[in-house]
Image (cartoon, rainbow, N blue to C red; front, top):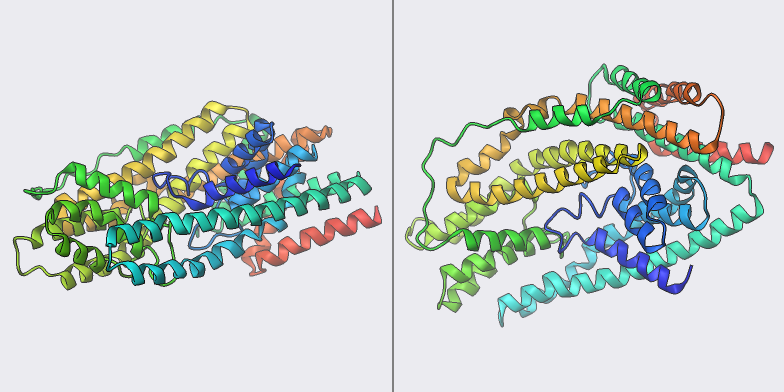
Length: 503
């Protein structure tokens, strides 16, 4: 590994963790282990190994969400480090996972303190906004936070990667048999994370559905394209059309709405902070609209920009309908004196909580894990077309939801926003999402364990893979009894180290 390699890995982490300049899909793609592993593979000259390591690492984070996942950690950094370990040490992906997973926890430090550090730019924005609001927001919402994140990412990931490379070289050099122990540890981590993930949905038959799907994958290598077809049929259900008349604006057209959407989707978390959360990004996204509404009236435009510079936080894709509604209210305020700035602020704050919970369920509990499971299955079965297909479904769904939200909120006002809240009650995919997730996870876990064991060259491959289902059931039982997941993870590492010493 050269200094250039370490810097490149830092840049990869910046691209994934930034989520800026990706129209909102970077969080669901580039930030996930399967993608960070793939990009790392390209950077280090072995994309196939990087993709496999990243895909298997992603199973550990399959129930990850910004509101709290099961195995707490940084999926982007874990994917980068696992891919690097698999490629540079030429070890099995599961071994690379167990070697890199504990070290990747350092990524949580950056995320935690990033929200505090960004408060510096909020203070700077407040000091400079009166002079030129547009320029001040651009500097403090895009350039300064992203440059700092780039610098921190390069330093943090370079240091972490260097440590992993030195530590791994020393351990594997002195104890060649350590790869077997690491591989066993990685397998157990995958089993544990899957056992934990099916507890995400409270359904008493989860373990039965998971076990059947797992055994079908091991013995028959079931093609989950059939499951994805069922998902698409359920998702393609036509919703009832809105029975109210569309709002027609004499000033705001589709061009301004799309420009506002582009700013929001690219910079929603660019200057994410404890003080305002997404507040700066909301104000930033309103600039294209306010420039059109107050053309030639700079003072009123600047006042409106500063008025929106307040606390705001919601799910950015489903919650985008709030933006459309606020754009409509800003437009109506020009002709209706009963609408005021404080009224718009009250509506904005009142809606964000209701939409946030349903939005997180829609994107982070249903769409993200199901499509990522499709990606992982495509990787472990060598069906790259399925990986690409699942990726396109993910990207298309997120972008469609976010852009349509802007238009629904603008055309139908508060009704358009509330329609988003009722989304799970109207689309069947949400009703069956827990069953689909458990079945897909069982299929992916079965194929993944089979793929890992086949790389070790052991005999009785099918029987060995099937026998590990007992470990899934045991872990699931222990977790349901209230034993903490972190304690089980620590126990796995300790037991395998003891095994290495006494063997």
